[in-house]
Image 1 (cartoon, helix red, strand yellow):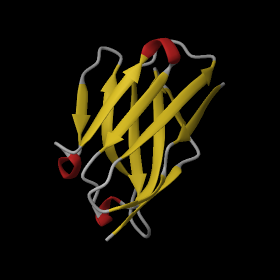
Image 2 (cartoon, one colour):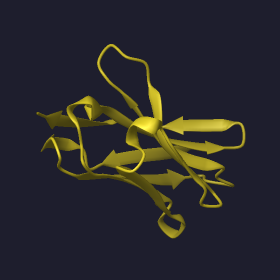
Image 3 (tube, one colour):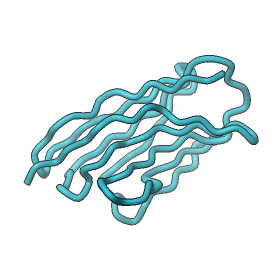
Image 4 (cartoon, helix red, strand yellow):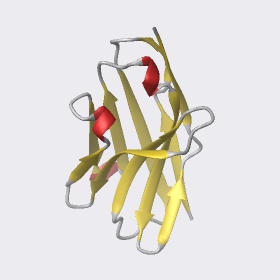
Length: 115
């Protein structure tokens, strides 16, 4: 079993920055990729950023140039540096780990951006 624990969410003013962390523990083998998703109130969960085991990254158009995903393989931890935050970035942010046919979610961390 794999556990994902997110941290770093909070309340920030528009234009500010936050850094989310997601630490994975448990029986982890051959991680394909780790990613951050978010779900705003009354909206569907959407992919924010993804990083593969090889280090390739992908971003939602809405966050390109503002968010950066990175990974510390030795610590099985993925980060999301969020800069120039906007009120529309307000959501619960979830970490996801995919290994083969298995996928795992974290419990989520709230990010609130005030205008």
